[in-house]
Image (cartoon, one colour):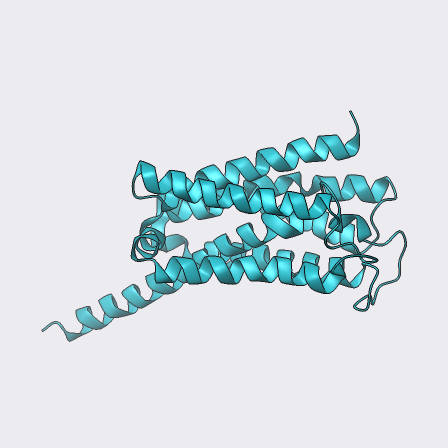
Length: 242
């Protein structure tokens, strides 16, 4: 089985897991879950089509700047959509923190970056940083999710550290990928370059999985901030008691 075909299967499975988990977590009822899953699946299909048509190819497409937009725009859209929808906002406040953390276990499949690097298809430092970073975050997602489930707000510090590292890893990977790709933003000229990230099946990583998982990190930060506010309010109330 070819590496690209294997990666296509892997990324489709990872995307399906993420879509299912988030649809269940954010859907208040079956109909809402179907709508969320349908919307996320439509986004996945759009990214697949853009990859197949080489919409982000550095020679005859939008190139690295367009790829940057493909990463950032969905995060903005998802954030605005959640906060403008009363039902989704309620779900954000109610979804188990362990679910938002645990879905990141799929990042352990970042081992594919190391495979591509070994095969001479991706450069350093992009591939090693993205690969090992994803593996670390993915493997630690399960114990941190368990800790959040068992300890609740008492696990605040551990979740905060893990979540910060997880988001920084995604930002570093995107930054190194863009600056290692052919185009006007290229700063790292190690060969073979990161141009394959604009083609099938690899565009599914920056175009779908990265913004979706980055959004889960932002959601975790929001939940941690809520816990901090409630904790301060509780301490203030206790202090004012006679």
